[in-house]
Image (tube, rainbow, N blue to C red; front, side):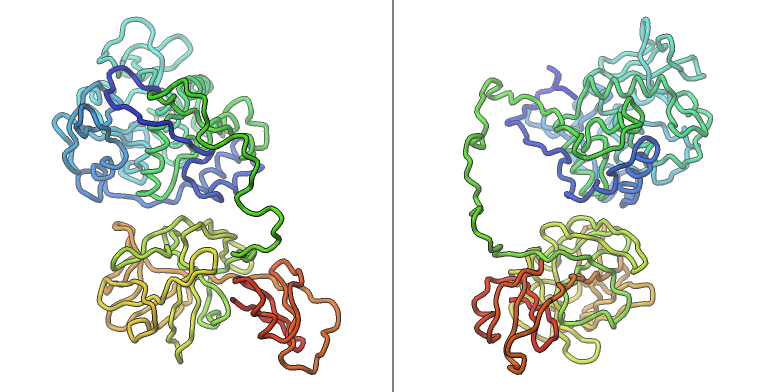
Length: 534
């Protein structure tokens, strides 16, 4: 979407966007190496699971979400960002203003009108002028030839040009204005990726080929890819994608990965996809100084802010795999753990916000013969150490993602109150049990269980039912130690290795450990191997 003269919103500066916007680094890795239909299905595997919100008015419903995803400032007033008309209707709360509707970019009648996940998905919903919504009806997208039947300057309805298929109701098509064609094309790509298994009705045949792997008709593919190139990813779409991610916890890969549609439907559908092929999305020119050639980051400065000749990493991050805890027997005081919501797969953050813990990124959970697992946690995840206090009771220490900063002890002093305390206390004593299904119950006495509220969203203690948790334990492969240990008869003599198996110290334990930087190490003492955190 490019900016039109009728918008009085001014972007103050150009946004420096990465290839994947605000997506976690690992988010799309599972799509590597796939092509065509297999790539589309791999993308669905990444983004299909999401939080489904209520449809309609209300803070936790569609109009409440639109306050975060579809507003702009016009003449100092917060207005709905309507991609169907020039109207600037004030957004005064979580309900429509005068003459506004919720519009489906693909009409829900195309799948029989069922009010399913697709019906409520923010990636296909937008605030819309009710008259434009009515004129657009459930017609397919197309390019109008001749005089439009309806034209408000933004939404046009008319007969399609030769080679394109209109509806059976007067042979009408809906054509958005050029500035929004890419936005709607990427919405169509998302919908036919995520909801490829819907029971699509006969209406869909206007653009859709039932039973085909490519789903969309050839003419529709050509037109939508052309629209996507003509109207590349904009700052509006990037910000909206991030806002929807904060609500639904999934993203539109066709916004994060511009050109992905070429590898699914286009000329590159027989080419194995790689994230390295994706170029940065086009960002609008800075209207304040469009000719300023100066990069805010010095392009000729060769200095690495981290000393390139210092071989010691002061905050080593263990390389390992996080496996789901299956039973109480998996709990010990030697390993690190991470908390993930059982349904939405959201990590618990190490940042407290008053009387609760914030949500972090999403866990890329896979399945293996050893159970569910993932390979890394995003920055800001709360990493836990357990100190057994007898039976099934533990003190839970919280560390940051780099394993070297103790945030405090997880504690609850009242219902709906969980935060970090500097020291152990009765309120920091938690009872941990694991069900046969692998769900973790972390109970703080009468104050309730630690659970995840996806509506708020936050982690805190509840006595009423919320989303349950799972614990994942970090499994760090231990290095193989070759050779004979010197002074084997000295109980306090150790050899110490980095997590990569490199010998870093040996001698009496107190002296050898004392000389190390903070971090996690492997210690060999009397032929036995231990992990230590310094």
